[in-house]
Length: 226
Image (cartoon, rainbow, N blue to C red):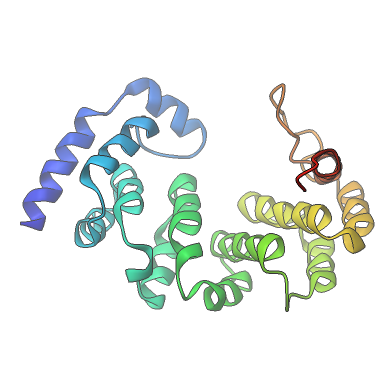
């Protein structure tokens, strides 16, 4: 039954293939041609199907893996299964959705955060830093924020792109959420100048940490609900 279903889903994904969507996606390192809105619509129709999700992931196809992450049951994956999945997720979008939609909801998230953050593979390490950023913002108790800033100050400038981006996100969140570390976070950002010249669309906040921190703090101070 599952094999037939996988074949049907793969055929439907093939029908959704759009050369223009592929061109846009490939510019971001994602090798698929499916519009994400249409992919989400397909996922909504399929609803949650854990075994189908596992089978789609096993195809290795990027669009199929993205769909798998939308229809899976995050807490149903084992620790080693998630570890293997993050090491196999080389497409940026698959990696991002896996961490944000699945791993963050897993009971193994904290254990994997600690393991991945120190991994020699920078893509795996970036997943660990993404999970750390989540804790910085939502559950900072027990984190050594000063120690994280030490690591960022020493390693972020020369880190590979994906890892550098994740560390920069963590730097910004420390500065935004923790006033006692804000001045140092801004100083590190200014000194390293990582993403200072990153092209930013009008109306969007720059990922350059000093600008990002200052803008988000300004919004917090202006919001009466904060």
